[in-house]
Image (cartoon, rainbow, N blue to C red):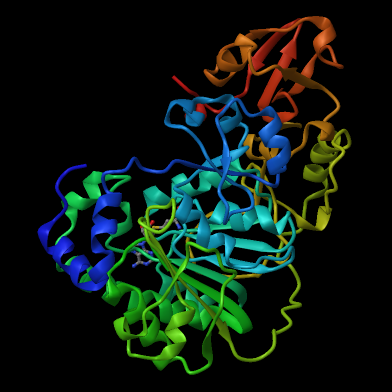
Length: 459
Ligand SMILES: C[S@@+](CC[C@H](N)C(=O)[O-])C[C@H]1O[C@@H](n2cnc3c(N)ncnc32)[C@H](O)[C@@H]1O
């Protein structure tokens, strides 16, 4: 670990007093590696059975595991099947403490690269809406890819400033996560470069930004709805200070207790405006548990939930498009509500329900991309493959993890396939690793043409 900034250390000394030496000593310990199972695709128990990694459950996250540095799960084909997300263990906490029910209207306002949005989306189980927003265009693209990899079928991916979204979605969402841009003091052990960019001005600058973002989130929260604010930093002004500001400026918001864990510490009222309610906030300290550091506050807005029963907005499907789509989808054993299928340009999408008719915000994706309509035929898309189960498609090439063709498939190479390996001798095959789809291939006389998208291929 490089030398930490002096101004940071002396502020932490003042904050932590007797505990400071334990905090400082935690920086000489190795960082923690975490993996969160995608429960849309596999249960944590089943994953443990098939996983080749050294996993130990993370006690405060039901689907989270510590893994060993030598495991390298980012290189394993299961990663490309979207079976898990690699995430620092304390960063798993915010999404786990925002209760999600299938059917909820969920907004992740600062979502890229998707560490928390993928978990929120998985817990919707395909019902309701996940709106994942990211202000930076390049980061929003990474977010989209992670949402597609996870197979989340009911999402919007947006690229907007929070205040612009607030104009479009007044009191619309009943669950909102604001995992705010912050000075990142809890990242110093994981990513020493963050320590290099820290200055003593950073907390104040970020607190200003957080005070701009949170009112927009509060305006989009429906009565009775829940808002979780989180940062990965320790500075009081970005945490208890910002929470105090939000409570003072929004009298309808109240703090709630979160499901505890022995290592969680309370917020400190004196680090905000002295309001004893701040004790309900949670601080994760690296010297008190096996995580790098986080802060969370869970708010509820007064009132009871509004009924958003507005009709879903989808364009009518042209007869000829539907005919082409039906020819492909008649084979797929996956429930499809045709009122939610929309063709834009040459691409077909499956819209979430609800799918509010909104104008104005920049969308990177509105619904699940099913694939492309070509002249009188349909080419299924990569996001569709990842949102499917092996049992949904009648002809599957199921490869064992150790089969060298898995890596060759992920590299975009053409594969040889024996006749007995698929049910159909030609046409589209859903290529799977064990039971989990990786993408499409098209079989012609024993040769599988690779349909794995060029931008996703491994080198
Ligand atoms: C802590 S990161 C989010 C991490 C993400 N939730 C995850 O778990 O993968 C904060 C995000 O806020 C975005 N951001 C920066 N300025 C912003 C602003 N003014 N309004 C909204 N988001 C902003 C950053 O681009 C960054 O992606």
